[in-house]
Image (cartoon, rainbow, N blue to C red; front, side, top):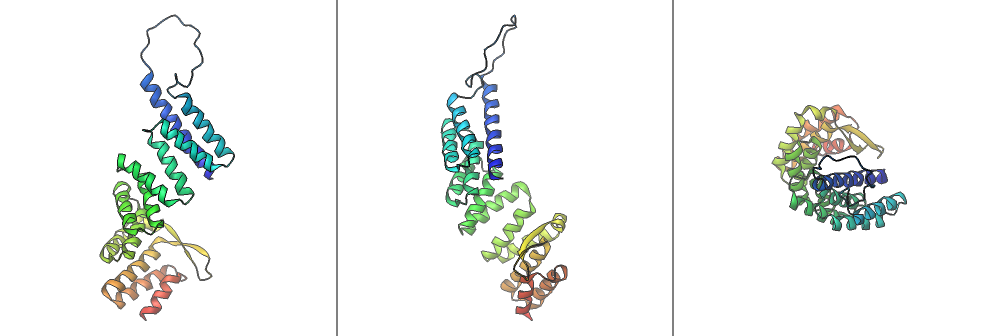
Length: 250
């Protein structure tokens, strides 16, 4: 899967770059008698021979599962085409896929310096910060991403980060917004079941459990927290976290 995604991303990047460069270099031509034309060279197509070489290097490295060489080729491509954000996104995605969170974040920040509304860069940065335990920066990135996308899964991540950062009022507000969103009714999240095996649950179950915890931590209201845990278990009786939390307030 990784190989296919990498090839697709860079193929799109390379093709878009070539088209852009062609548009820049093509000029209107006077009508003349048709004559045999030489085959287009990379320069005539708007892409340098060196860029084409590095692109072929990248594709070959991916084909042979050598991701270090592929990364090297990406750097070469970026140096040759420094204004091509699609190439930089491919590099950020490479680091993300290989769980190299620090360079993934740094590359994403470079993209965001150019365009603060780059949704892909915001998401990679958010995941990277969260993986490094820098929750406040992760939340900032998710907040910016949510303003752009209005995506329920982004707000879901925000709610949990807000709780972890003890911003309980914000967490409760985020949960309330999500519970009124029809998209949440069909959204699923994965948690371990009673046998400690991954299982999908309705997103609303996790949200009710989270709100119960936030109410308990922030307000100390055991009655309201118990009601929320009960609501979660009414939807999914085997949801372990809600069971555990309910036992704490009995």
